[in-house]
Image (cartoon, rainbow, N blue to C red; front, side):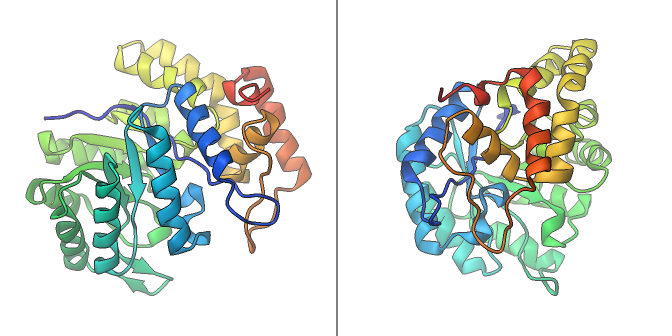
Length: 303
């Protein structure tokens, strides 16, 4: 059984001020994440603004990212789509380019088109036939409930379903139940949500976390200390970054990572495509003010 551990941040997608993709900036983002100590990287996720990127751009970003990372760390490619055929095609494409795994939410579209438990199982089963490990993303954005018995069934009956990113309300409770009921079939129980519930999730048995790419080097010690049994050290390390994580999660979303990367010279623009408005200047400044005492690598990486 493979155990997946550590911090696997989501890479933001940088744009130029005119809204076009900044491909050189994308490479710098990936390098910055690796330099921060990322154990793996996820691309094209919600925090990568996947819902604002065209299919052609998705394919281009997948190729550019995988070629640039070149095996330095594992890369997860997000492939979520309501149409199973498209999710399968995306999985095949990611595998052909050397992705280590794919991540997907259950099938949904808008507020009303939601996959049933059986439709969800079948979509993951068909993607699993591609032959690439799958991380199940249990996120409120889909609006689809993924009860623990369904997740355990998927883990036991679909060979490639190995990892679970649990970022629903009271994630620690669900992680604890998932691990207890799924046993060795749950190879990689992760949390998300920028790590806002990380300490409780690690207590519940999470082996890793998929955060944003903002302060990977500051969050990683929390995970490492907890896994080493240094709960007091992990608690102190988490307390040090908790205010920044809270502000990111509750006020900024993925734009916090972009703002920090602009401040640190990683990328040139924090532009987000319409209809996403820019961060309010006061909210942005508070984010930077919270980061500066931490002295994260991101604020100095490109200077």
